[in-house]
Each structure stands twice: as structure tokens, then as C-alpha cells.
Amino acid sequence: SQQGEEDPQALSIQEGENATMNCSYKTSINNLQWYRQNSGRGLVHLILIRSNEREKHSGRLRVTLDTSKKSSSLLITASRAADTASYFCATSSNDYKLSFGAGTTVTVRA
Amino acid sequence: IAGITQAPTSQILAAGRRMTLRCTQDMRHNAMYWYRQDLGLGLRLIHYSNTAGTTGKGEVPDGYSVSRANTDDFPLTLASAVPSQTSVYFCASSDSGGETQYFGPGTRLLVL
Image 1 (spheres, helix red, strand yellow):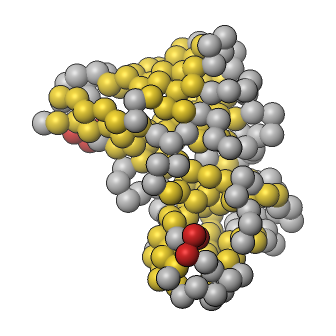
Image 2: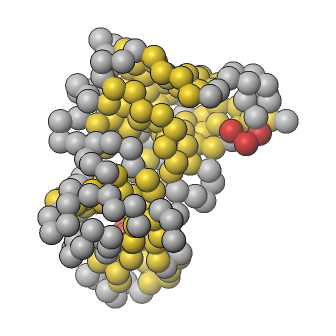
């Protein structure tokens, strides 16, 4: 069964605005990862945050992890049209497999 | 080639037919995975392999089989396709289990 759940399911923002999406999960994890999927393409890894980390940055991406609340957030700052995609969180637990959520679809309007 | 390749890109298949989806990686990754992606359900793991010679069942393995004869190749076989297997199939690999996965471009399969 899927462990991660993203919220919201869909998000529409203006170019230049920030986009925030959240992921909640049920069981303890080793790490949590965020992936992007452009329409008709495979998933691309964005960032990995380990269970002992609270925040991580990569370019315009900022990820937080709160293991006490079993939740993570992905912030995309100064969004661009090219950020239009679906974003998925995936959790890795003791079985070392990834469990993906259903994704957040982000549309950036010019 | 660099990364993961999948073949075919898309396929229309009659129900009851046998089909093998191919996946090849050139990153010398130990672990490989097959997922299916259906609208609104995200990705679900079908089968995985932690290293050449070993395979394991994922969340939705029924109707599918895999083999891992070597490091680079991880074919997925549908022995007798059914319409519910209509989906987009993604192959992925990682250096080790639970770490960053690298995805292929996908195979779009329609079973009629």
C-alpha cells in the first residue's frame, strides 16, 4: 500500500510565486525523497532527506522533514513555467524499497 | 547509452498474449525495479531485484514475472495479458536499495 500522501492534489500558481506541497506518511522511515515528473516522461530525482535531517536545500528547492509529525514539505521558490510538472514524495523504510504517493500536479501560469 | 532505456515505447496488445517489456541500465547499479503508474494512484512496485540473480515481489506482482540474469538487464513479462494491465510501466535502478532511483522513459501498454 502507498505510504506517502501528497497535499494538495493540484496547485496553480503565477510565475515568480512560491509553491509549497506537503507529504504525510504512516510508518518510520530511513529517508524521504522528492521526484518530479513532466508530462509523458519518467520520474526525475530532486532531493533526498534522511530521517536524522530536518531541512535540506538544492537550488530553488527547500525540503523539510518532521519525523514527529511524519510529514515533509517541498518548497519551490520563484517558480518558472518549466516547473510545471507532477511532484511525488517517496519514503524508504526498513525494507529498502520506495513507496510513492499519488503526487501533486503543479501548474505555473505565465 | 547513458542511464536507463526501456523498450518498446508503447504497445497495443490483445488480451491473452504474452509480452516482455525490456529494461537496460548502464550505470552498474545493483538494484532494479518495475513500477506501474495508473491515473490517481501514483507508482506501485511490481517486482524488484536487489542484485543480479535475485528478485522479489512488490505491491502488485500478480500476472507479472521478472528475471535478473545480469546486472544490466531486468525484463518484465506478462504471461497472459489482461485489460487491467493497461498502464504505463517504468523501470528504475539504484545503487542500493532505498536510495535515489533513476527512471527510464516508460512503456505505455494498452491491453484490449
